Image 1 (cartoon, rainbow, N blue to C red):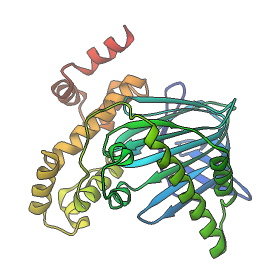
Image 2: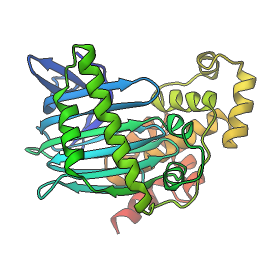
Image 3: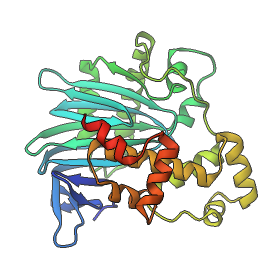
Image 4: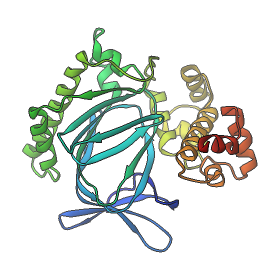
Amino acid sequence: MMETNVTAKSQPGTKVVLTQKIRDSEQQTIVTQRKNSPLSLARGEFISHTCEGIFSLHGGASYELQDSQVVCTSEASTIITLLIEGNLQFGYDDLEFTLDASAEPQALIVNLAQPCNFHRRLVKGSHIVKLNLVISPQWIVNRIKEACPASQFVSTHKAAAMVNFTGEMLEATKKVLSLSAPKTLNDYIQLEASSFALIQMCIEQLADKPTSESPACCSTYNDSIGKAIHYIEQHLSEDIRLEKLAQQMAMSVSSLQSKFKQQLGMTVASYTRDRRLHIARKHLGKGYCSITEAAYEAGYHHPSNFSAAFKKAFGESPQAFMQNKTE
C-alpha cells in the first residue's frame, strides 16, 4: 500500500476523506477510505518518482471509475502536464484548464510562486495517459544568472503557457512512463535523463510564449520560510502548533514568527487561517461541501465563527457568497 496523498469528493456530494494507491499484481487502484467500504476512483499502471531537490513526477495510464472531484494543496513549483490520451479538467485556485488529447497530445506548463488549491474532475469511464513533472522553484532560481523569458515565467504567480507537444517530447514521455518500476541503476538514469530532456524542451519554448494570468511577480521565500509554508500546507487539516512547527524548522518560536512576518507580512496563525478560509471559499464555490462542512474543514467548531471570519476576509457572508454564485 502506498501513502495517502489527496482529498476527493465523489458526485453528487458524497464526501470522501483520503485516497490511497493499492497494488494488485501489475495494476494499482486509487481508493478512498470511507466508514463502510472503500470506493475505487481509478485503476491502472501508475508511476511516481522523486529526484531529490530537483523534481518529482507522477502519472501513468488509468481508467477513472467514479465521477469525482479531487482536491489537494499544490506547493510552490513549476508544473509540466503532458497528456497523451484522454481529457483533463483541472485548476489551481481560480485558474481553470481543459486539455483534450483526442486529436493530438497536449502539454501545459504552469508556475506557482506560492501554494495553491488544486482541483481536478474525474469522469467515470475516461481513459487517461499522462505525466506530470513538478519542478522545485529553488532549483530553477539557483540556475538563473540573468533575465530571460524563463526567469520572468518562474517569478510570476500562476503564469501558464501551452507547449507544442513535439514528436521528440512524445518519445521522451513514453520512455518515462515505460520505466514505472525501475530496478537497475541504468533504469533510474534513463528515467531521470528523459525527465530532464522533457524539462529542457518545455523551458526552451517559453521564449516564444507570453505568460498569462497574474502579472504580479512574487519573490521566492527563503529556504526556512519555504519549508515552514510547505509544512503548514501539508497539515492544514490538523491542529498546527507553533512550538512543533518551530521545532521542525530548527529555530525558536520567536525567530520563526519574526522571519515569517518579515517575509509574508503576517503571523503564522494569520497565514494558516487565511489559507483555510480561501480553500473553504473555493470548495463552497465549486459545490464540494455545505457551509457547515466548510466551517469544520477551515478549523471552526461553530459555523457562526466561520461566517464572521469569512465575512471579514471576503466582505460577504458564506450565505451571501453561495447565493451570488447561484444567481
